[in-house]
Image (spheres, rainbow, N blue to C red):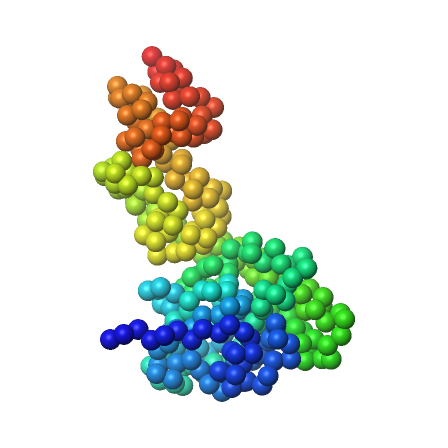
Length: 307
């Protein structure tokens, strides 16, 4: 069975046509209600779509499945999901009716942001690269606030375009994204129990990896490898660890490496070169540099302190 060709939308106008929506008021930005969409990209109950623009969705009453890779997510009340251009989104449902839901969808072409403060800043929001199953769950109060901003954007979008239209819409989008950032931080705090389980899985994975031959043969595990093993996105993992430990994933891995290197330096007769290679470093200088950054001592200085 051959995979179906994804629906690739190069422009917002093309998306509107496919979804049987009215022609967009502006070629580079659009805001629509999901209940206005007449057609859904799941006529065969499974499909994949790619946008060449940012999407910000507030979904309610969605009964289908949305997937990122092999991870599924069931959408309940008041859930937000944001995607950057070129990302692949898969949809699946038991019946066409499952694709019918309410809420808001904001489409933003990168060109709309040219010469604005948001052009660079939007690329710094990690949540545009979170997986679907890492979507933002809103409280009732948060949902009302976010809905109000969508309504303000919609009112400006549907009013007569003038010299201030872009600036007003940009300001409202920036406000919306600022709240998303705040609410995600709240989600990391309120979901500490689940996050601690991920932290335990991370500890177990790194311990097993470091105790096996993988470390010497395959090198230091990358942040992406670790995230894949835990079934979360790299950005989400780092944000989660930051909220729990104050460290990024890379820093967390490095801490574990240094702890292991200290053990080898203090309990074995292995040379610094041998320890560096056993820890997955291609060059001893890289190991020595990291060790000194973390401990303010060279590996030899640390070893001598035990003699």
